Length: 298
Ligand code: MLT
Ligand code: MN
Ligand code: ZN
Image 1 (tube, rainbow, N blue to C red):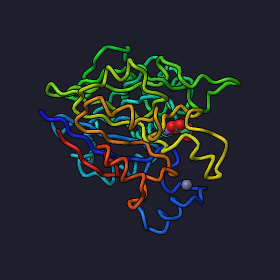
Image 2 (image 1 turned 90 degrees about the horizontal axis):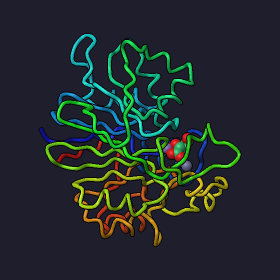
Image 3 (image 1 turned 30 degrees about the horizontal axis):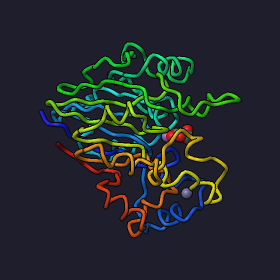
Image 4 (image 1 turned 180 degrees about the horizontal axis):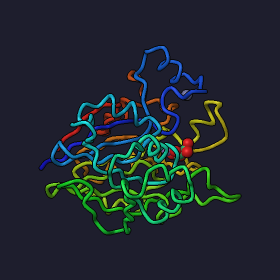
């Protein structure tokens, strides 16, 4: 048993290019000058045969098609044995609808996320007798595929955009936004695609881990405002920035993590341009920038 992961989609919600976006990165991607990216998802396995998909993005159909390890092994047999979602955001759950078709797999999430899904009748397309909804208690490890356990823990975040009320708490810690602590063969791996801030508790938890996949949504907090794309800051969206004194690059500096990989990049993020100074800076600090199809093994 040895941990392996495939980045199915490295972009945040919207992807690169985003359908309605004319920002420089989206234009470069449309012109084929930088790689396009699909939306946030990671496939993980301990044996290379049985796979769990962490977050089901709206692009999952083409992500599976592009990934030979996830192709059917028989008439109606899929190597995907389970799906785990870390929040109720559209980029992480809409792909569940493409996984109907009478295929059995386990669906793991917290109780609160399961109730968000249960409140939406569309998800009844995943018949309960084929796709059992496994409620994961925070802090309790479950085996998601043979040889690989997942423990969910709260990370600062917010409720999904479509459930936001008049006021929104963006550093809520509970069942709405979680990180995943994967254990395989005695190694600790973390998957945290959405995180508003790295609290002391979170820093302590991930310190010394073999590998961390982490929220790489924005380079800087006001990136989308500066790009003229709207008024929302990263903070308001529940996403920490890479740069700055409280950014993830600075905060991770002392955490002694084996492999640091940014995932869930928004299409405005300058690290998505191969020749950018920001990408060089992130790499110099020991980070890898995920790409669709990137395979990583321990
Ligand atoms: C996010 O990560 O902030 C959400 O996916 C945004 C969205 O729902 O589009
Ligand atoms: Mn997202
Ligand atoms: Zn764009």
